[in-house]
Image (cartoon, rainbow, N blue to C red; front, side):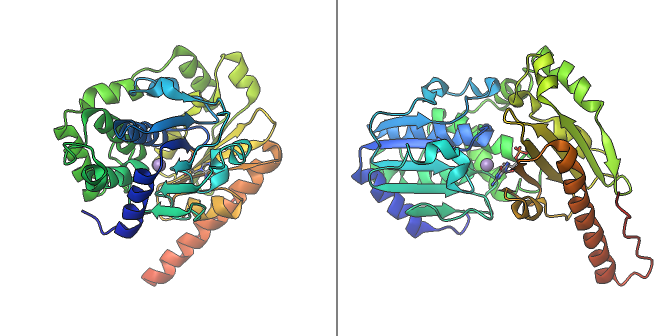
Length: 354
Ligand code: 5GP
Ligand code: MN
């Protein structure tokens, strides 16, 4: 097992033992790790007989509704604040949606569990493990270590319901075990979950082999916007509200589009610019190489990981695209320069960016 913050885990398990009413929330536009982690925690607390409310700003994506108890998640605010708020997979508290921060303020304590490197310590207890591939991986350690202490009988087993949720989170955030975060520890945890009886093929099919026709039609339009710059090292796509409307699609249908251009052989950074309903521009970043898109995104007010990040800028794409592409181009160039310096090459070929 990894080295981990056992003191924080122990403190969190005392909090769980001491209180009865919990709310669990996760980030806006929730993904497989967000929902998988949230439902695994729900199952854990319910088995302990706790009163648990699940509140997210945005609905559960259709391809994650197969997860056990997904129907329990709602956007409905409770009439009374809970004693404890648990926030999962959110780099800062506003990631649950600014409009939820006040209404979800708990009576006593906030627990923050996350794997983002730049996660700020907004909780009373903060269990942050940037080396974990997913929040679900952290929860696996927490549950297996503390289930028995808290009174879950068979505490050495994770339980099938929680195993399905956690496996989904790990599968999702590692890109089906393809990304660099698919560490030995991630595989070991996944192996334990499969031993618990998780049907990996069924989970894969539920999450990825259920694409609605409208999504393919939308993809076809979005691919028309494909552009390259920076000696083909930066690629981008954009999508407007009008394109979504034409196909009866939502932002949820954009999931995975960026992967098509990230896969291009020359590309180091891929970008997807999407117009929000408020007319802002959401930027998704993916890096294949050493460019730290988490740092670029953070400098623009967003966040994320080194290889997957995002932010939302208030201007129109006409302004945002050249601005962000230029910033990415500079990062690619300076990265290329530093590699040249490191290797002492004299034939530096720093790209000229548009
Ligand atoms: P995506 O491009 O899939 O929306 O997001 C990729 C990753 O970037 C997410 O897992 C999340 O960690 C981070 N991210 C995306 N959008 C934002 C944002 O607006 N703010 C912050 N802090 N992080 C974001
Ligand atoms: Mn995650």
